[in-house]
Length: 181
Image 1 (cartoon, rainbow, N blue to C red):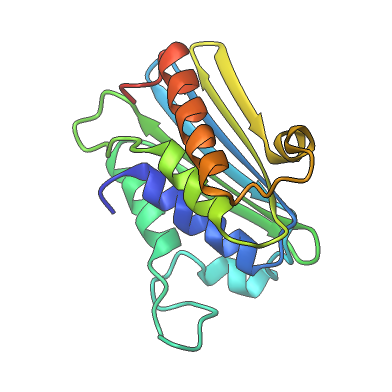
Image 2: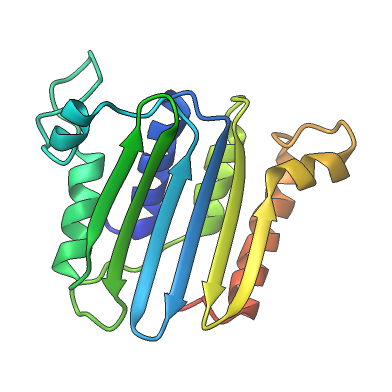
């Protein structure tokens, strides 16, 4: 993948397929470290599957025999001088954490988080999202539960709402200094 936002999209889509009703996405830039954490309350994985999840030939899909999302995210982190971990408890949920050296020449750019979130919100799933972006202590937070409450019955999937969300995320990321991640 050419940008980390696509990894976030892929991992988050896995969370939705695992039945998550809440997915928390944290993006934290502090010093020379970029941390991306994706936590869900989906069905989780047993230890046997968890041990194999970073193997590209391990997948839950029946349409193909490879699953590249998790292995590619792990590889991206490690190539950029970072770390990767995945923890999961069957029936509780999963947490994926990747770190990257921001100034590492092999670090993929963060990419377009606003488009990633709009893509996720475009689906009619009952999943709620909490996006937190923090740059050197400056923070932006988007909670779809709060947003839906403010919309007062208007669907979050409406094109005008999605356009507003995209613009709001982009403006807030720029305002806290995250535009160049």
